[in-house]
Image (cartoon, rainbow, N blue to C red; front, side):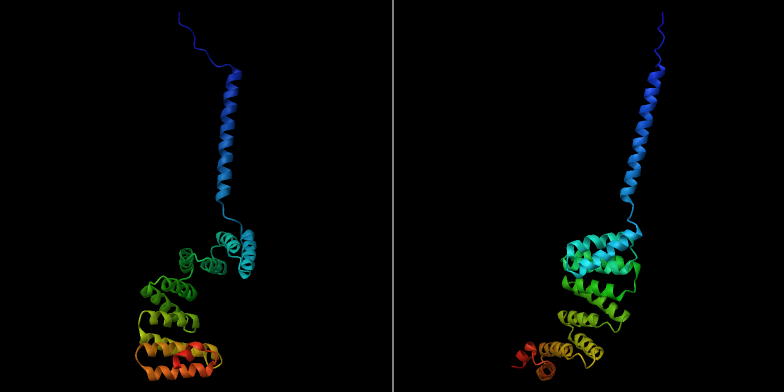
Amino acid sequence: MVKESKRPTLNNTLLVAGIVVLVLALGVTAIIVNNNANDSISAKEAAAAKAKGLELYRQGKWDSALSELKKAVDGNPNDMTAQFKLAFSYEQKGMLDDAFKRYEEILKLNKSSADAHYSIGRILVEKRDLDKGIAELETATKLNPSFTSAHAALADAYFQKNQYANALATYTKLEKLIGKNDTLYLSRIHTAKGQILKQGGKDDEARREFTLAVQLDKNNKEAAAALK
């Protein structure tokens, strides 16, 4: 005699169905929670984080500034101010690789950013990658011919590369950009030119530059020492 297969009772069927619904519900909830965790912060939250981050930046509280500015950039990647301040904060922490990557992200947003090219150039020079650093700084000065900091960094990079003629020419351009009012800056330029000329064996021309430097700033100890 063949036994009939035992069928689940109505109560068992309802129990199984209930368990399936519960599992599905939990799965949906987990997906929702996970999606929310990956969502970017809102524009309002990004603006608040930026304001807080900039204040912390001004106070020199780099770790806290980094935390807030990261939120600001996550919420609004097109905010160039937040992007730059985040990169500057990395530099202040000595995190040059992170700063470099951030400047590269800025260039993706704006290829014509002289500030980003200048900052990348500075970091490359600091890492002793002079050829690439010089190329970036040259780009910065072409994009913004009045960019005095870029000209100064470029002249120094040329000097480190022993390209004395290029260094002198760049310092001369910088001298014209500075004008006659900023005597302290001009004094430093003449000192730098004097050191380059001295390095090239042009002692008389170097002495003239050092003399001008001291005349512009009597407290310029480097130029005064060179004259002695």
